[in-house]
Image 1 (cartoon, one colour):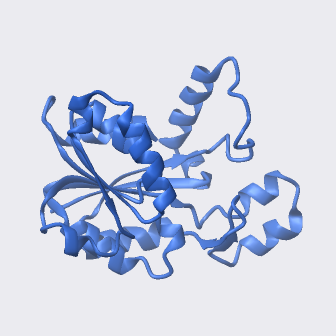
Image 2 (spheres, rainbow, N blue to C red):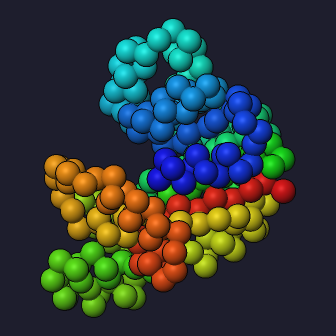
Length: 233
C-alpha cells in the first residue's frame, strides 16, 4: 500500500517537492507520520478521540522538524469544507473510511474539492466484487454464497459495514472531477492471515508477490481491498 502510494506520488510530482497532504480518517497516524518524515506537510483528520490521542503520542516521539509538519484535526471527514479552503492540498488520502459511510458520494465530492489541479486522491476500500473470497477460502460456504449478492459484510471488528465496486467508484470519481488514474489490489494472498500473525521469515518475498499480484490481472480483481488513485483535472 505504501509502495503504491509512493509510486503514484513520484509519477505526479517533481522529486523533492514538499507536498500538502490531507489524511482523512488517519487512525493512529501511520501514513501521516511516514509522509511527514519524507518532508511533506501533513494534516490528519480523525473522529475517534482515542486514535487522535495515539497519533499525538506517536508524534511526540518524533524530532521537532517532523512535529512541525503535522497538524491534527478532530472531525469525521465530511466537514472538510469547514476547516479548509478548496484546492488546499496536493494529495488527499481516504484509507479504510468509505466502508463506514452509508452514502459516500458527498464525502468523496468534498475531498475532491480539497485538491489543487493535478492533485492526487488516494482511496482504500473493501472490494465489493470479491466479498465471497474470504469466507470461501476459509471454508464457510454458506457465507460465501451469501456474499455474492450484497455489498454488506461484517468486518473483523464485528461491525456491520459496506464494500464498494470498482465500476461504481470509477463512475463516481469521473463525476466529481478526479477520474481514476490507476488502481491496485491489496491483500490478494494474505487476507485470510490472522491480524496478529508473525511475519514469515521470507517477508520480503511475500511483499514482492503481493505487490506484483496487486498490479496484475486477474489477481488484483479478487483482492480483499482496492487502492484507487484519482487525479484532479
